[in-house]
Image (cartoon, rainbow, N blue to C red; front, top):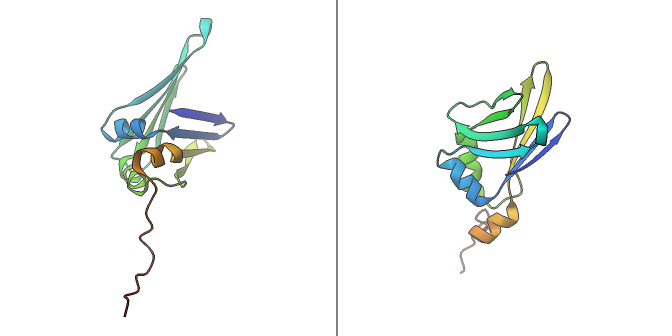
Length: 123
């Protein structure tokens, strides 16, 4: 899991194997060892709730994402478009973006076939 933090923005990018773990009910964890300051972790899991949840403590953050939305994204892969939410963060807004690495998806799934083109019967 790749994590980008910048001001009021968090971007989470997973590869296909991490997405599979998440869809199988596992909690993903990324831990950074900060030496004498201890460790800091970000945990990610899916939940039945339609809303995003963010719970934090000094040791890290647990983010819960809506299962149905993440599962829907998995059905569209490979694609460049991910999911985005604006989460209330005690009066501020936290922009949360969730993506699956498109290059890894193409390697795992192959290129996406276009099915939206109209088929014209030959005469």
